[in-house]
Length: 284
Image (tube, rainbow, N blue to C red; front, side):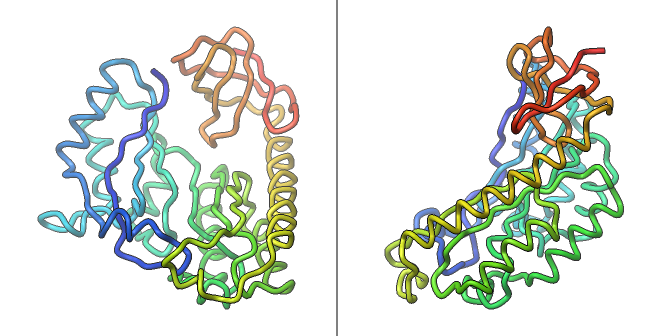
């Protein structure tokens, strides 16, 4: 009764060269806002403190619905019509589709958590082009800079693929550098694997050992970024949603252990230290 995942969209209208999902799930389809709000209200009534909006391409929400609403308008309606919802979080989003409305909600609405997980996939422009992504390295870096300028406590997560076909050492170095440039503290690193029927599967492939090694290097880089971020939180007072007795998440999604914290409660805690990839705290 702590965090609920609510699917608001499925399918995808885009055809990234590495992805098989659109072939299996079809084009983007959205759940009407009224159904989403009704479902979230029921979750809140049964004790859930946080809801995560999910989808295959959640930022494409709404264009197939009457009036063509978008994700920002859905978030606004949820916050207005479910006033008892304490925390709202978004799953992986495509930065190129963050309009001014959604940007303002991510950076200025207290009930929208300061945690943005971006579908970046790579840090090199040639690889992004071969992936058929719609953003550039520069756009990603600029977006994160603007998010942090408006909401300094925002934590950045990202999906990155290691070892995409044709990726050379310099291209991989750009992905490594992107972790630092964007301050990615919640990194989801995936070693590339070819999916039958996708264009990328027909491109010149890297050997598995190189892919595995590059994924390990990216994970290490991400762990270093996470450790530095967690260390920066020591001494601060944070709101914690306790998921299991004594374990919970900050607004930024950082994990913390708070002895005595009861599952399903929102508490204030002082961050006292770090142990590996999670924080230590004491309830106030």
